[in-house]
Image (cartoon, rainbow, N blue to C red; front, side, top):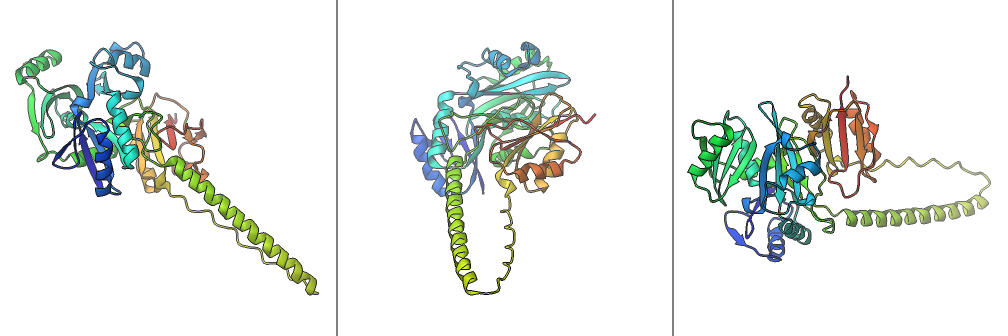
Length: 395
């Protein structure tokens, strides 16, 4: 079951009707709705007043590093853009590289993270409404004004999927004049009017991972102290992938697994010791010893590959390679796979977290026989992904 949560600075929608929220009340709301939607995979859509989408030419930054892009982004947003509340991607617009950046208010991100953690709700990621609306401009030749008449009233100016600006209370005439000056247009941009009747938000947000090009979910990690359940904030597409965290009971699972292992080993030891004692007594009574039949080797527990999150990064320079690899791994049983780009390299690498069964990386290697995947550094436990695969150039 899949459902969406649309949230703004003071309202949250779990369906058609908005619920007012303020401060810690979000925890109570999420707890109540979790009981109504038990087991549902939830995605959060961020309203325009809790995040900021900006864009600027790549030439504005001295070097293509997270630090330099964050520095430039701070010149375009009215709030303090902190590293753990910011992310970015590159967009190729008619041969010119642009940067798309998203910034989320830290206090808001902490409130949502706390609500997810304490309610136990399954939230896989969060996506700004502007990103979803901007995707409607991908196949348009010129800039488009996209009016959203749903939970909020806003206008997105986008060009080929790049969100230029999001306007909340700006007159159409001002937006048109801005578009003409910004993009050298002689006529007013085409206007699209969207609402819940002609745009299925649930379908849009859940289809993001399944696009055929090298796109990915760029994540803004939540506060480190909000464990074990956490959320992701994302925008679609491009390069510049950073770490985030998914809602999961990691430490509790580990503790339970260790406890079960200790109990099983203890019980096994007792059984073996008892059997050996009985065998010694029986041997004294018998004149002919019977050779014991070897016990069959215990079959290792089957690996549930769907439990492991995988990221495939395309460093080969071949367009679409990560998407093709994703399809191969989906056929092998993996279900949670993000894809993206990384600077071109000749080395192919696989990285895993500690505790990931060897069978997971073995299956990936078997699936990608064209690549000689060397073992990379161990991934940090706080990272978004259990496995990261980097595909290099085969030449």
